[in-house]
Length: 498
Image 1 (tube, rainbow, N blue to C red):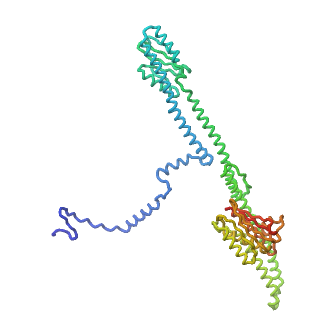
Image 2: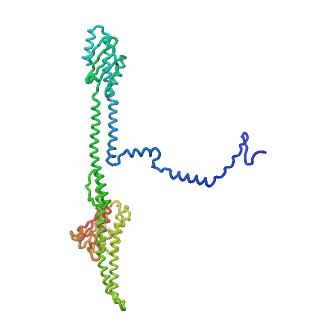
Image 3: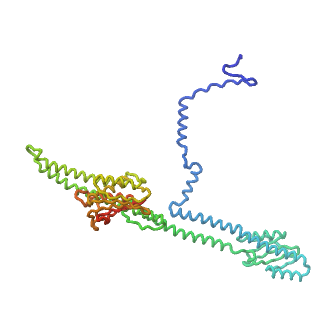
């Protein structure tokens, strides 16, 4: 069609719209600004759990009002439910029970007064009226006096604590008569005056018929009991917090290098457990420091002998003339032996100082582990008679460290004894490993000394094997000690918790 732009299809009944102008490409500078803005918004977008807006503004003043100490927060946790509970109890009593009882009492008194007024309207003689008022005093305990030709000048009611005044005023208003109520003139009597057509009816109602009891007594009882319970709870909570404070002070002093000594566990069960764990941790750290200090002192002592021999050997070598290799062979062999001895001692020191802290504990089946250790000991020449392992669940331990302990104990049994037995017994919360041999054993008075650093029962030993073994076992929360074996030699007993 003439006048139609190419590429535009025109349907019947439609109006041809002018084509949109082409969008110019954005400049690179503008696109760069948009990208930077989007990245900034992405960085400032709060992640999950981050409080923003009104929550953050509300959280800060609340944190300022909350106490910072554990005792203050614990007392606040006790006080808030206590206040809420007392408020609910007051509302239930004052708002429902007391209101219902007071309304019923006021309605009853107002009904008796109304019934008396209706009867007074039906009597015409003075004698009948006197008899009726006397009967009301006897039957209803309401002292009534009719004052003829009087006008009630000040209607209304005085106010007292409680709903009694409002309930009585509402009940008397249903009579349609003007009235006045005085609650304050007499503490035992409520004076009521009603305007009748021919005078004023004065009614003296006993207060006990309208008042359900002193409200302040109930309030004092509720508040007093709440305060008493709060004080008792505060005293108990203070004792609990005092144990936590003592634990915190001991931990801070120990972290500053002081020795506060073991703290006495007291308070709740969780606090006692924390105090016991702190005492065990403190004991392990002190033992660790003492062992490393003794090791450093023993390095110079043990290395002094081979170093002295090396120094003497070097000093006795001739410094002039020609030297024959055959002549120096014994001296060179002795120096090589001294170097090997020092290398062996240094390796033992480094193993002791390095420990097994880098290895992570994991659940391990004990039976395959013992079989592997026993197989390695047999290849080294040990005569293991039997390996007895009771059925037990997997135990969480550092496998390489425990393998090192068992290998060391089996090697000691191989060197000092002949036949070896390995037994694993499952207890309620721990597993007990028994390593028995038929060697000469160790006297009772020396068994504990063998766990000290540099105490060796054999020539050429560094005296660190049992020390390292106890260090590893105690790091697992267990213990190791030496006993007399049924085979006649020595028994090493290891206890590891599950």
